[in-house]
Amino acid sequence: MTPGTFLDPLALAIVGGGTLLATALRTPLRDLARAVTALRVLGRRRFSADALLQQIAAQDRIARRHGAMALDRSVIADADVAAGIAGVVDGFAPEAIAAELDHCRRARIERHLAAADCWAGAAETAPAMGMVGTLIGLVVMFTRMSDPAAIGGAMAVALLATLYGALLANLVALPIAARLRTAARVEAAERHRLVAPLIALATREAPRPIGVAAIRASAA
Image (tube, rainbow, N blue to C red; front, side):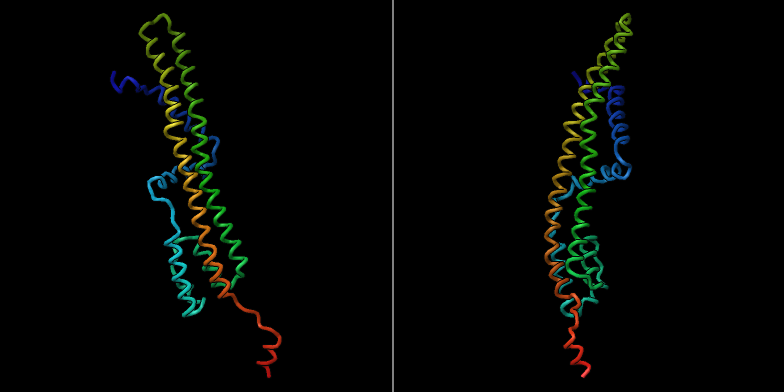
């Protein structure tokens, strides 16, 4: 028995093409694109906020020496940290910056989970497409009972379609969905570590209201 025994282009086209079409029809185009681009995450190390925390610490030192306005010249690649530092520069209240960071973190989680859900949906669809291929193969087999040479090919399509559906669901789509969800949870937890130092920086650099007594003293 050779590996070619388990290869059938028609069964593969039915299962693979049907799964792709069904997934595309049930998923918004933006989430479908995210599901494809999210595959890059699988080859990376787990997200760690250590480098971003060091960057925030460096921004804190700059603010202590030169004031919050000096942070406006900093180049920050990470969107969440950039949003927090921009809030500090603009003099937003710490509560507003915390709310913005929470919004960014939740939006990021939703994007990650949408990509994982797309692959989970593909895992649900693949066995069904395998059953469709099996039915097609059986129909072809029963309509060609008078041709013994055609029965074998139709039976191969029927059996291999079920095999392809099971393999695609359990060895490809489901593992990808599970790993994307794990990566999303890890990143969410790590990004939560960024909130406290950014809020501490915002609290220290927040504009302080001038009291009436201070105004009178300056006027005198």
